Structures are given as C-alpha cells and as structure tokens.
Image 1 (cartoon, rainbow, N blue to C red):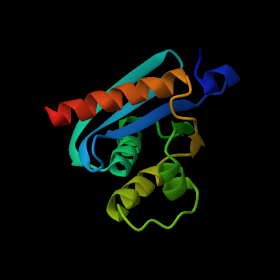
Image 2 (cartoon, rainbow, N blue to C red):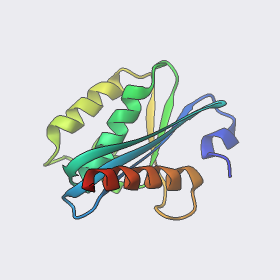
Image 3 (cartoon, one colour):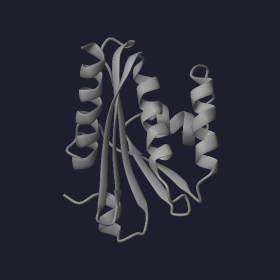
Length: 143
C-alpha cells in the first residue's frame, strides 16, 4: 500500500508520527516515518517517563527538526486527535505549552505544514510502522 500522498502524485514531504506511553505517564517513545520521493527515514526514540500526549507532540517536533528542505510542503499524518487539535485545530492547550510553542515556531519556518488525521490501528501501513517505532522507543525507556 502506497502512502496517501504518493498516490496523489504530489511533491510533498509525507510524515507519519506516533507517540507511545506505557502507564501515561510512564516509559515513553516516539516513532516517525518520513517519505519524499524515493527517500525514506525512520526514527525511533526513547523519551524516558512522559505522557502519551508529550510523546505524540515530541514525535512531530523531531520530524520537523529532521526535515532540511523547508520550502517543500509537509503533510503530517497522525492518529492523535490531541496533536491535530493543539497544533492545527484551534484548541487552547492547558498543558505542554513550552513544547507546543517550540513546535509552532518550527512550523513557521516551513512553506506549508498540514496535519491529516488517520485512524489508529486501521491498516494504514506507514502509520502502523510509526506506531511500531514508538512502542520500540517506549520499550527502550522501560529497560
């Protein structure tokens, strides 16, 4: 199954992000899959003890920090309603304000950043991979 944006034939950097926390807060990790043309990069990172929302947000931050070409549009796919709400949906955040501010500052450096809600655990291949990478990071935090 091809990533959604590749099927559209668009010249866009496609990103899938996920965060995981066992215990919430508990051992946490993030997963990122970045796709652009024939290029692919996967990131899994342990975050120590954190909430699921912090892990989800940090995955977006790491993805944006990793992208070098900030002139191309970026489409971030996430299954996190929280991420969509606080970064693109006009929600007023009550927690994680510093992290959200850092991400918004990064977003401002790009020509275009769009967030797309994808269903969790519904067979979206790259989203499932980001989930695996996040769970791997959380397992490393627990070790």
